[in-house]
Length: 299
Image (cartoon, rainbow, N blue to C red; front, side, top):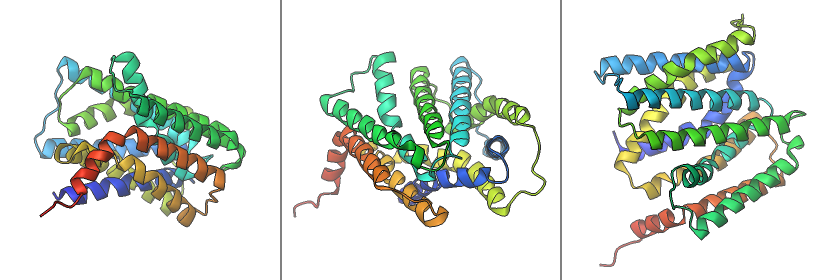
């Protein structure tokens, strides 16, 4: 597989996922939409594991990774699907762009990592300021329950970031696709429980756009995107991979405006700008490395 093609695939998948999440819940309900997505993702990932003879490790570290990964996936995705109904789709990508900042803070506290340089601390503060700008007038960002939606999404990002730090602490080296199967297998019963508590009904007439969004998320968002991400990490410098979190929020906001008629006010752009500036400062060392790599060589 071409590394640039895989990189572009990740950018496209991560940029379109927030809008697909919002579309998938229209006419289907958030509980059914997320359960159906995870079920599709698990079936596809399991087929690939069997077809490619990858195997499913069941040693102690793998089991801990599956349990932690499943718990964080359930918490993050359940809250994301619930909250995404009430805010502009692009804001989902903007808020998840904060995950490197949150994960760094958690790693410093839980793992004792010394990665919080003064520049990264300043970048984190800028990100927090951008978040404050967005939340300050959150009631005008999508509906009457927009603040509740934003709060749910922020909690989802925190759970997702905590899961990343926890998985790093476990240090499981199982194949990524096997980890996907184990994580989805662990989380799927809880998604099913939420769907059952929500009524457990299959929509009689599922709109084509909703059905297509669910299938897209199950195939691309839950399986292909995960596999491409690990492939790119393996074959590309971290400095270039880090740029994904700077690119996708802007594309997601523009897609929401163009395809979902979302009105993006100046406060959203101002808050997004502060968050992206904070991320850029956080990734400054990686960006400097990337600049040197792209600089034309002297003859």
